[in-house]
Length: 287
Image 1 (cartoon, rainbow, N blue to C red):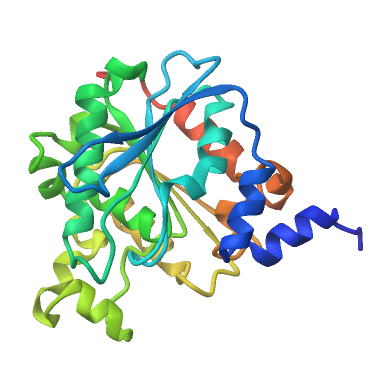
Image 2 (tube, rainbow, N blue to C red):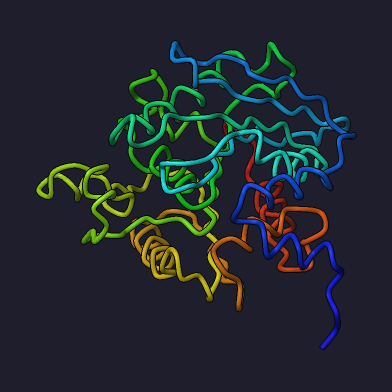
């Protein structure tokens, strides 16, 4: 068996901890993009986003709004510079917003916050150098849930005067929970509210033929979010006549699917390449 670089071993061992995020940030290139930090998109002090503009934009590609994971109770936008840098290096403008977290809020506040971030990008992104037009939403884990709910359930973008069928080019979900009832966790039961209303919280129950194109990826070794979430949502979209690409990465776990965006860890799986290929193959906006 080949020996992994020491840094890669350390990153994998520590990635789920704050020290892992610090190490990833330390080895993430600071060149190739312009960062505008802490742009407000809502009244709450937490509702700020970081905007990364590429040095060499790729023509025709949508801006991306990336939502991080953390079980809806943890996460900070600054921890995901490695994702934004990876995408900016491929020519994408990327926004990484914060959203409010449990226990300070309950469902659906984090979806309302996510929709507000997308609305800001649609209405003000071009003022800061982002490409105009419909955006792509993307997320990992709980952030994939946020992204996919915006794509399939028109209530959230509708509350901002937007329509996912016309204001989103696509949605990308990495290791997301899309069909996860019944709930066992006391925290999730509290977060998602009364049992008789939980069905409406599931992305799989909102798929329509108007759902924008989806890229759904999971790792076969994910023990945090069952890969069947991705498989079941893929099947539901196909049944509805929608467009979906589904990828399973053999042996990849829950953290490694997003860790594969970090430059020292891209040997884990071609997640960045696959997302880039999917987005650049999208039909032109308005077609």
